[in-house]
Amino acid sequence: MSTYHVYPTRDLIEHDTETDDCVCGPLTEPVPRDDGSMGWLITHHSLDGREKQEQNR
Image (tube, rainbow, N blue to C red):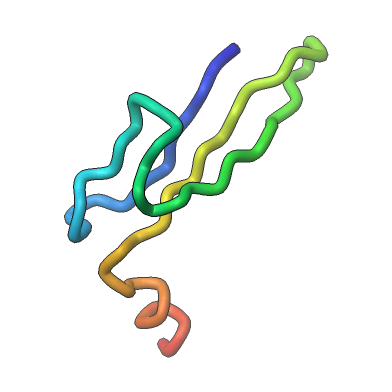
């Protein structure tokens, strides 16, 4: 089983990519593989508000 983390760089905090306990409340999604097994994609949220700035562009 593989786990991949996607996280913002230069954020207000250092994101915890070693455990499932990051303060940003990441979204965890199962990703089916071609062989039928599952991997995991963990998407971390920024805490500096960059998503709002990107949506206003």
